[in-house]
Length: 374
Image (tube, rainbow, N blue to C red; front, side, top):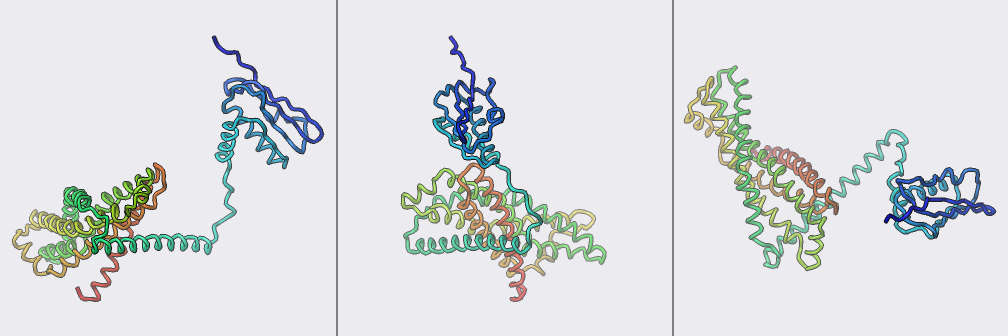
């Protein structure tokens, strides 16, 4: 047997300068219910009091009525008092007010100096956060040397496998194709001067010094760096990092350092692997028509230009790139918002930050190595 529905009513009574609105009945969005503008039509009060002591069942229609009353009172500068209204309806009305508030339109073109100052402040805050993480990692390394760090080699070896062995296929494919591209591009120039053999010099030097470490770093920034940031961001949202701190476990020792150490250790090996595949790609193109350079001649010519200092240059860059990727990924993961979307935003920010630091550090290395004559 269905319960009869009592029609929703809003009875307005003006007493002096106060308009009393009595809400009664069942307020359903699917049934007819009073409109605020019709309720206050013809009245000019200085104070409005809404009471709901005789309310029945209600849903969002009541919250919409209250929100309309609040908007009307604010627009006319009239004091509004709400009494004996269900707390849920009042809360829903507040949420509606937050969602329906329109942002103020921009007053004009942003001031150049203001925008520059805001950007500078944000950049300085990012630099401080990165410096703070570097300092905490340095302290963690000191504790590790003293045997006091909560560092687990088991976790580090697992991360080495993920960022090292599991990344070999994609790193090898991209490096081989980079070598192919360099060989094809260089052939366009050197064949004009009859120097087909110089393809070996160009590909070997470019791959060993620049493209090998760079390609391995870019791949790991998108593959491993994003995964690290998303993992830490998810742990931040689930309050797992807070739980570790409550238990007296340092998140830097337990979560950050194993990942950074794994990247620093595996990046040089990945760079050497990338060098080999890049040189192999260039050798394949040189062996094919129309260059027709024998592989033994190609390898012998490459040895005349590539020496151990060039290989060491690439290895040093690779280790630095690994450190920067680990720091960027962990920094963005620890900075992630405590929500589901925060992990995704942290992964995106980690890739952008890692790529930027890789390019900047590579430029710095180019200047330093040129000054040292390497």
